[in-house]
Length: 274
Image (cartoon, rainbow, N blue to C red; front, side, top):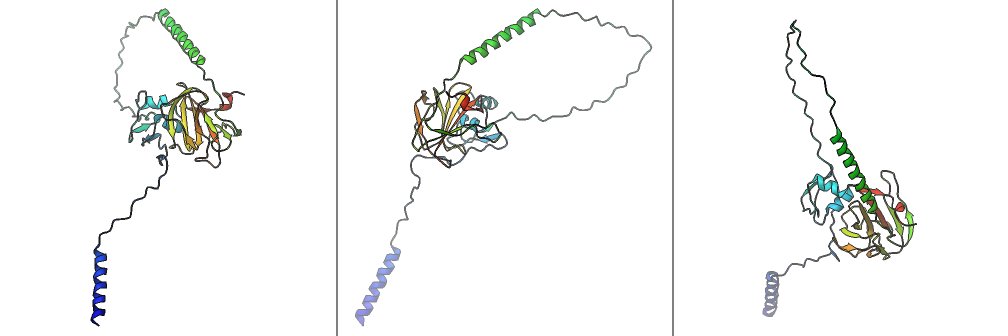
């Protein structure tokens, strides 16, 4: 009997000791794999946007179908267009509120019988040779500038090998590029010499996206990639492999290729070699 009581007491002591033993919490497991991706997407509301980490002015302007130079001018941002998280970007000039002019009291004027002398001398025709000369000079400068821009053409090449399964649409909500279909991992190449101005996944509907700047007027975009092989501000040559074809933010494996001229999407088929 005594032995049974002793056994019970020993078990009770063991149980109490186990309850008071400190234990470490369960470890926090990081479920993210691979490169860090920014889950937030660029969403334009009321013609303005608050900058988030990883955004670039080129990507914001691209998402809004605006020329980056116009957006930079509105926000007084100088090249290389550095922006910061939390910064508010306006995409249009703020509208000026119209104020009606104050009503002035009407004054009554008494007319006299005396004839007032008209001291106004007749108008003389002004000589305008200087103005004419300036206009001609300005016109010649404009034509030479236009000629200079037209000579600065981009030599385009196909960005990937595959079948064109979707074409450019002029409709407002139509497809603003061409879709080239092939197997996953197919090489995606730069369509012309340029610099990478965006590489990421913050634009809704584009998946892993690369945007290249070729001139002040021309950009090209490469969407839905499985892997990005270049970084922002990197110089690339025409034909250089910049990504691998994939299906990020898409229903099937394909490359979405766009060309933008001064912020507006244009038909790539008119620029690519036949």
